[in-house]
Picture 1 (cartoon, rainbow, N blue to C red):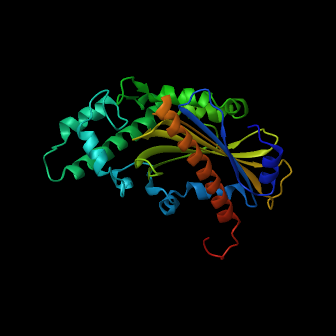
Picture 2 (cartoon, rainbow, N blue to C red):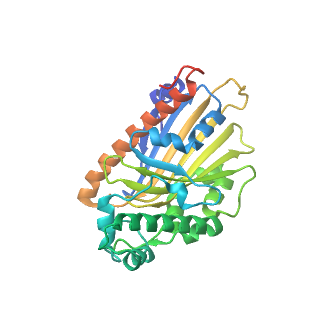
Length: 316
């Protein structure tokens, strides 16, 4: 990560540090962050698995976890906005403001009565059905059902994009080959003790509100010198911007750590985003990476404050 001596010192003092990592492709954004937390890793993992907490965070318009058998009821509070509905009405292969495979565009054209006064209800019901269908297929067959976005001129196969993005994180297969393989081969190759969870989120960080479908994985790395717990968040779908993405958070303890000791929380966020090439894209990219870096630093400080808060002291 090429941290400076001063950045390492800041992390060791319990101050969050975040930095943008270099990327050979302007469409890819990699951001690193770290902070030392005086708490147990299990407390962090439990906090991050509590999807309901996302509804309280700035920038989140809604979030919910799916049941073991996903239902439409798991998506109460999820809805497409007026602009997305209008854009969907005009979606055609190669010309669509939403990231969609062609079959989803056809489903909208063929099943929605666009002259009806309840068109919003129709669209949102269809969207939820399509999300459930995608998630159920993924639970059975993994990445090969994620399809191909046809909203732009060039087809974008989601599974290939994810595999390509993950391969850029060269340290990951080197140190955690079993988890790397599981993220690519799901539902095969599941390491012992791994926990899966699935959730949706609707976020607005200053651009268009975006709905994302995510697969969370909690993993404990065996046979490493230091005790390492990992939380991986793999994006399965997003309505805008994020063609593919993965967040990797590592809770690293010393090999001789006692139960009272803390841990280093190390995070790497990787995403491949549309519209970041060319002159205009370069300007947008500069804004995006600055927001990504600053938001990660704030998030790490918030997590640290939450986990180090004395019991009974109330929320900060």
